[in-house]
Amino acid sequence: MNFINTYYKNNNARIYQCDNLELLKQLPDNYIDLIYCDILYNTGRKFKDFMDNLGTTQEAIEWYKPRLEHIKRVLKDIGSIYLHCDWRLAHYLKVEMDKIFGENNFINEIIWKYKSGGASKKKLSNKHDNIYLYSKYKNKYTYNLLKEKSYNRGFKPYNFKGIEEFKDDIGWYTLINAQDVWEIDMVGRTSKERVNYDTQKPKKLLERIINTSSNKNDIVADFFMGSGTTGETAIQLGRKFIGCDINEKACEITKERITKIISV
Image (tube, rainbow, N blue to C red):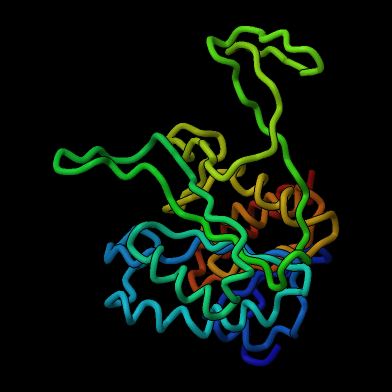
């Protein structure tokens, strides 16, 4: 690829340090099976590792537009994208995604609910993010149905005929098809997962995404790579990975997380 800095490369992973738009322009059509992007939320904040400021809401959407157009182009016909944002840009991005991918290719709005974060005294505390799931083509995308626990009322057995029940340390439960509200803890300050990078996302979140929307040996990409959770999780689950970030620290941390897996 011309003028693109390949930061790291092996048989299963490639990391690029560059503007993601420049990389996207050079990737071939119909190439990637699954894309997850934990994008800039446009908070206006200066984090330790990056500046999260794209200007006005309209300027932010204009910045995202060409990137989303290329994301659609590089996705395989069976591919899908999980676009991770919050209340600041969520509704505007949903409209833009409807335009680019088509309203009929919208699959789900996933609510990621967490406990961590600050508490407000002037409004209800913000305790969730929005993740928009779109396919390239309706009813053609990879989808592996996952199950989740649904605890019985009172955590006691129902003893209904033909219903299989299970018990754990909390109580009795059944298994149901996965739903669109995901209650997953953030990466805590004392977590063994924690790396030295702001806004790190938990592996459990990426495991659910990758297992749902890709298969082994598929290519998973993250064009806002950050802490490298997508790359590490993808490799551990037997996928190939393409990652990109303009920040050298993000590339360094992701490389370290991936090479640790390979060396085991």
